[in-house]
Length: 364
Ligand SMILES: [Zn+2]
Image 1 (cartoon, rainbow, N blue to C red):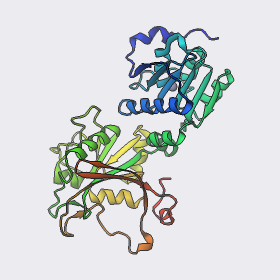
Image 2 (image 1 turned 180 degrees about the vertical axis):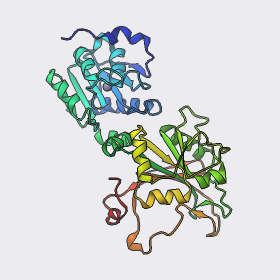
Image 3 (image 1 turned 30 degrees about the horizontal axis):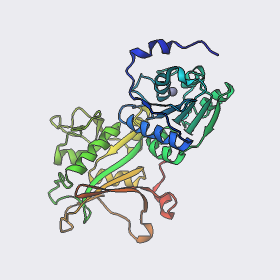
């Protein structure tokens, strides 16, 4: 067995993000992975630009330890769990939502830490799509005699890590469009004002969406009409970097921000290079229409208020000409719905199986 790594000695100096020790109980692979998924959720707002990963160690005597990804530069989920379990890792099983890394980035490889800890079985949710990992972590573990199984709760983890997976596969951020509309599909009144269509609970949910995103984008028209700050308020989480499509005045409250006048595709390529995993587009309707028509939106988050503008002179979700005939209708599939106070949230994603979807592109 390898010599003990120096990270053991230095571990006490680092702040661990999540360490929990649970009572002894019998869990099967699915149940243990579910605990890891829940742990990963807790890292969602802190792990950027790393993926939010959870790890669970079940010891030979049935004790359970868990960890999740720390802030950048800190230990990965596997290391957090290994440190929590201390000497009890010998002969244990580790569950990781994402394949353990095998490269030395900002931290040492998790594979070696797993091997050094004497862990004999590793259950992996999904293989890491990152070209630096992509099966290498699993191979390394197997070469060292660790039994590795993959694919436990893979669908759930694929959805949980969708922005990360999309970024690694396309080198572009996962684009989320969030729009608040009345039930007659209006996002702004005839004078262009669009604030406060939805209530407090929905607005709080938007704060969470912002905190989950690495960048947030609006059009210059929205800045002129509403002068938003686009920061994270009232909840924990960092404010994402701000991007405005078009040019705005120096006095706008959204400053400092990036003002972009090039193509959307170039913007996404640029943001992808800068490790932006998720871009939140918050309007207005001209910007929303551009992203939609170019097929660049991965997820639509619509907040519907039980309200009507009562006419067709306000702004719609999408500005400009829509489809000419029903045969060209864009169809999505509902991912989730929930009530937010007096409003309703519907999340939809492009239905790539629908016949018309090829017309509008599929995000590479
Ligand atoms: Zn790692």
